[in-house]
Length: 242
Image 1 (cartoon, rainbow, N blue to C red):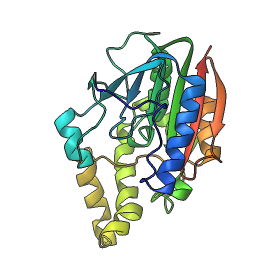
Image 2: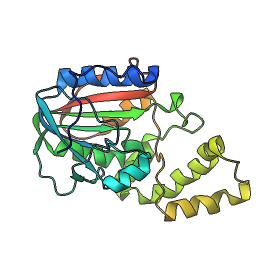
Image 3: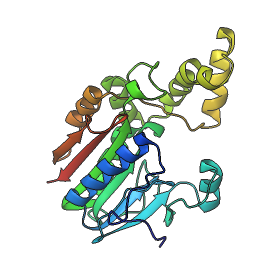
Image 4: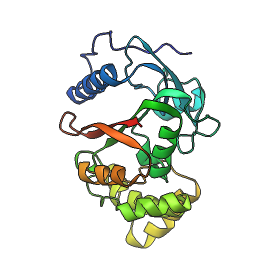
């Protein structure tokens, strides 16, 4: 397995203040809640810092070469293929904890992913999620994803929402980095991206809508902590399986 830095190592003070803030909060939550053997999906180049008595399997839908291309740098945390949507091939109650940071927004069925991440941990285990708060990221012009939309994605598998997410990308995100696409081309460009299964943010949350989503999930778990005030641009949920 790839060696990952633990929370006993110093913070990288060459990083931006925002990155330092995120790392410090995640590290603290890890020290409080994580122990034993876990799994993290989509860790990329910023895996969750682990306590020294915890170990982790790092899974992604991309291989190491794909991750290097995606992040335009080496050093991504990767041990093998894991689908963060389904956690297919992983038995129930297999791990002590599961981690997912800035992954749910890239999935077409976030509720399904959360339920599967809880499925694979033992009773008393921890699932921890970090999602961007759209108000403080490049998603800020976009509407918040409604709970009804998330529930429909869960019931259908979410593929029908791909075109809607790509249309929001074209309308609200693309103009931040490139010339605005003419109105008559928006549907065409969205369809092209959707057919290519373009990687974008398909859903957005604020703290309130994130909590509303968690309240809907029909799995026996306890919300140990919700952290929205400690980090400038993300919401973190700590769930304990009962």
